[in-house]
Amino acid sequence: MAKNYKNKKRGFTLIETFVAITILMIAVLGPLSLLSSALKNASYVQNEIIATYLAQEGLELVLDLRNNGPLSYDGASGYLNGVLISFTTQKVTDYTGNICLNSISGYYTVADANLCNSGDKSTIFKRTVTIHQTVYDGSPSDGQFWISSYVDIGSPARRVQTSNRIFINPPTS
Image (cartoon, rainbow, N blue to C red; front, side):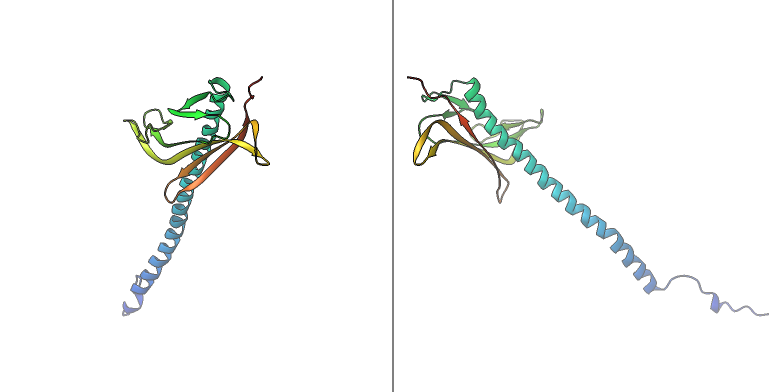
């Protein structure tokens, strides 16, 4: 009895191999693109959270000057990270500073003259604190001030804002 070896070919054709590789690539690249998108979104959200905390800190620094510093309604002033902050009638005070990251402690600091100290790393954050007297019906309201703290993130800039109205007792006669 003669054996026929031609009918017992084993293996894959070139087309079957290409189809299998294509299916595997689709199965692997789909989840990888989702992972890349998720990591990008996580970085965006992390920056938004940091900016929110930095903006809130700007408000708290001014409130600390009011509560524990030399600030009063009669025009006394105090310093916020080296910048004079004054609560006077209809005066607008702006404080702007670049935010640096201390690589040793991990804390954020405000740059002096917009330059980070040695050992600090420049970040994409820039904070502006604005203080002005509250005005009702065209006339200033005694003892009420509006504080806004903005943090700009990166370029093109996205902005996070927190605001609060504070009261400072007017001078008694």
